[in-house]
Length: 209
Image (cartoon, rainbow, N blue to C red; front, side, top):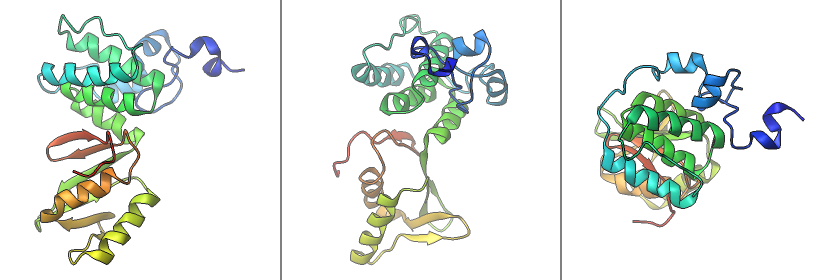
């Protein structure tokens, strides 16, 4: 049995939160991120924007309700660096799942937008952006369920969601934003992170609006 799979390391960060490679020194294990990723993604620097403490508390509360073992002793002191260190460590321990998605969103609220985006990409993220033609562009990881729902949608609607080969993404009119969101959240797994012009959303349920 390797060190990474030993029972005693289940609650210790053994893999990087960003790249999932093994952590090889004590500081990296404590933080949950290797030195290369810390330098590359700006984690050793100050946050990119001021924390939104209301959103931080609300998001951590959602994570805590799923996993009561989560503990953030620096929350009352509003120490964003100390909390971010703990959040990254918890992400590194768990690697994937709904709790990890909430923790990634917490990093965004703490002001570490660049880092939250990097970790979201590793987990699997859906991106929705605006095009110059007044349309929405959706890029994502492969999901057969979503493809089947798009085919079904196109059979029953005049405004099609079509595949743009050059952009390697799906494109739809902005007026169909609500229909697109319902397709996304009813197709991709719960916990999937969706990044759009209004920030980050997490698919928490699969009930239509």
